[in-house]
Image (cartoon, rainbow, N blue to C red; front, side, top):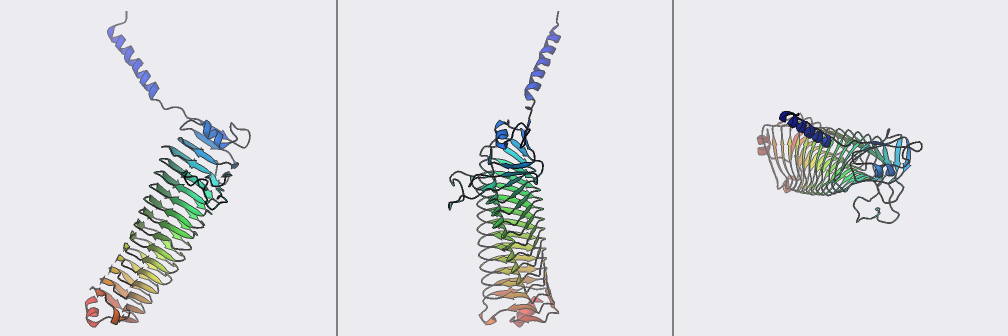
Length: 421
């Protein structure tokens, strides 16, 4: 006869078995795609047959398909140079993800050839979100993880909108019209990647998006990184160089923190901040840009700290309109103009080295400047006020070492000179 304790022990053991059995994750499968000799010869057929969480593995070859995924899935090739997915339908993405709340990982393949419609509208249907000629489009509430992928020869390389999210790691986004474009409230992290030779912007951020760009190279695009709307960006430890227009542009009410980057050799300006945009620019090397290292206009505001700003074609730091700037602990060297202030711009310049420029600091119009504890040396001219008879601004400060310039001051009153040093 079974005792009472034995009965309860049996019941407890059975309950544990049931709970463990039902809590185990569902087994996932790997579905194989190849040009011949595999379970599937079409990637989309494998995607359609996959259960959520499965992996679709693609063997070497060129696959002329436009793909759509709206389930949790991993799409994995055997190398970006070996697996190429070539969009064959005009006005559509090569790979479309969403709009459901899904997580899709894309690895080790190439997405290419998303072609514009022959009509004026480049998209298949502008009312149908994400259906534009894009290498990879993510919409709705989807999330994509991209690693070891090449995206080239499309109208847009990567396009995110809705509340979609993306991580782009160790990938190449090249030879598209636009490299990466974010709209609406999308979010993205781009790391360890190269965005190059795109016909317009390498990265374009619009509306209320947020993006982090780090340890990446943005080179040889018409424009490097363009930030508008109320977008927010963090740009760290990257190279933004050799772009035809500005390396980094902020306009409207966008915000950015730009730190630890090399911003050089861009055809126009290294960093341009306009309208009501705000920027923190810290610990960058900003050199050899065609016109200016940093330029502010409109009512923009910036804090510029601990940068090396040198060898730019005309101006190290330029400020116009009613923009305001705080310049601290910088080395501003070998530019035509070290710092130039015009219109009704406002500036605080302190603890900086302004050396070996043709003109160290230039003021005109109604600018207001506080110049404190700087080392202004070996410039052709240290500080100059243009047309002092028309100057309606202010120049004040103290504790500066203004020495060894060809001429220390031009257009500055005796009392102001005495105050500055």
